[in-house]
Image (tube, rainbow, N blue to C red; front, side):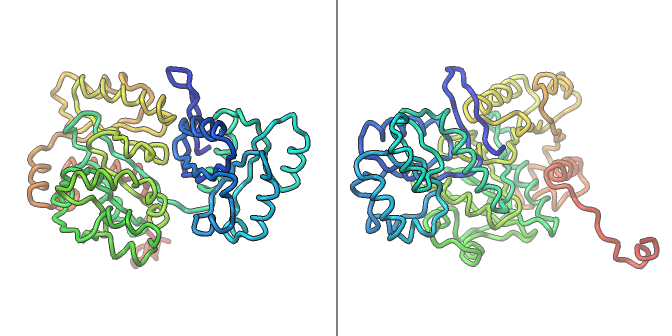
Length: 405
């Protein structure tokens, strides 16, 4: 299942979808619209577009993007309008959207009409998100299965300054070293965005351009807008020192993530400032979330608290979360066994404390996994990257390999 349903502390049903689902909600009453809107607000990655029944015409729909689902209220001349639209609207004719009709379940006439038109379900107008969950889940699952999408890995600081940017950047580079991987790194810091300096890059374009040009984004346009590092890592960030504009653009980031996932094998996103509201939809879409913590009681406590937030608020199971203990020092009182015991059944990765190498690589714009390949901290990056994408055994092409093949 690519979706997770759960109960939070207030016993409110929540649904998190792994892929985005676009809905047309065709309504004739404000009451029905407000009810459905309230229920869908409990679902992450469901994007409803509301259309009054009297405006549900081929002329009004021709500029709209085809939806994944159509919810229609069985009221007035709904059946006639729908039949006419399926005959005249190219948007609907070219769409594979499922149709769900909402009405009085005791009204056998509307039920028969709905089935004759081709509706997949006929539900009560008072249906809650619990009742809609299986429908939304099925559509999201089908979308996800029909495309080869990049794995999406999020690196999140459990406490400010824990090193999520450094860990995620070097992990992305390590993944990019393998020719079979096509890796995109996203620096999602809307205020400072220091990763471009750590990589010694000067991007001409960025995420703001990707978001603005989302409707025309193809392979050629994308390669024009991303910045390439010498190690073949693709890079995107927001404009440095434009926090207000970046904040507004970040609200639309969810619209381009599915598009970006179609062009890469792995996307690594740096959420060094924690889980911000603009990026909440990324959590449920992610393949893995890595919390970067430090060797301190406060940091581990924050990590444990965040694990609970992901589970309760975003419906993300614990087996989708791993923890990186950064700057680990064996001489400290808090041992790795203590940390593992505190976190429970969570996989823990350990990065040794090597301040000199890390600081030097940041200042020079030379990532340590490239400039200090034999260091202990580089070994830790290699292990983490291998856990994300195991390196296949290289084919024996040398003469000695051919003899023993």
